[in-house]
Length: 449
Ligand code: IFM
Image (tube, rainbow, N blue to C red):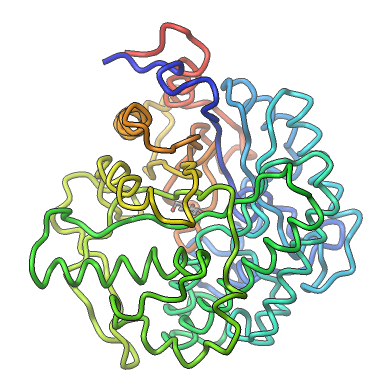
């Protein structure tokens, strides 16, 4: 069936997404300080190690990359601000030279008719703050809010769309698994961090709103990978619900001023000890939109116990197709989550802020034939189109990612880009078949078959 841009409506935002650590490189340029992920590259927790510090060198190639992004015909480019590039070891002062990089990116987007959509934080916590306890320390709420406020002050004259935080759930997972810092693996540290992230997002949202005024659109993003199968019954259904409460509602309910879904999820209950008087109000913030990060469902049959706390684990045994990060493919999970959360007060509007497929692409004779990524994207977009037609409040779609980049602990493995990056040839960029496919969808009024 033909897929046309017009099927999604005129106000639908089309974009691509990326994150600072994954693309920028320039880890020691212009006074940038180290982040937890720079440290993870050094201490062996990132596959491929030190070379990942250079990421895909986007810092030095912003003109080329922005030309390629604009060439797709997108409305928007989503990227994040590297906290220790602009704000020292976490508490300022503002680094003018580091901050100028984002002036170049923002101005470069606008000059090309592409709206900058800025994520304030996508996991690159300053290492110095991690050494004070990172997200386990309650004082980080104020540190993060001060950083977010200053980012809004610096770029708010040109940036109208904001996301406060990228996938706090993933950071909770990193802490539980002990991927960075000196405290893991530690489930209790992860739960304390979860609560502090909720407080930090709400406080940052309030301060950004005070700086930016009512015109700006302030959202955030969350992982929305519901448990599968969707038609589960009995104890399996209860287990699914417990996992969904931990992975989704534990972020949405506090934002809506409802506190935590302790009754639904035994996994969350130990978090009670970190909640203080007044936190219910302090964790609430009225987001203009909810960013949906969707790659596939979390099948959740196995629940091993770690440090006395049950930890849900992926069971991908039944999936037919999986990405390199092992997430099974299930496009209908998208419409399930829109239906399930459409009436949640934290979800006024949805924007799919990430969706994409990780593969081990190969370039052969100068071409990358990534048919599986095209198949994945088409299937997910068909479901988004169905959601729009059903009247569900879905306003945008951002493909992850515009180019291959560092897939966190997987290093250079697990390519998600529409553009191939040749690590053996000075980071040379080559548009893949999926780039041409997305471009045709966005630029050809007849759409794509
Ligand atoms: O690369 C990540 C991104 O940083 C956050 N969301 C999931 C992507 C793919 O794993």
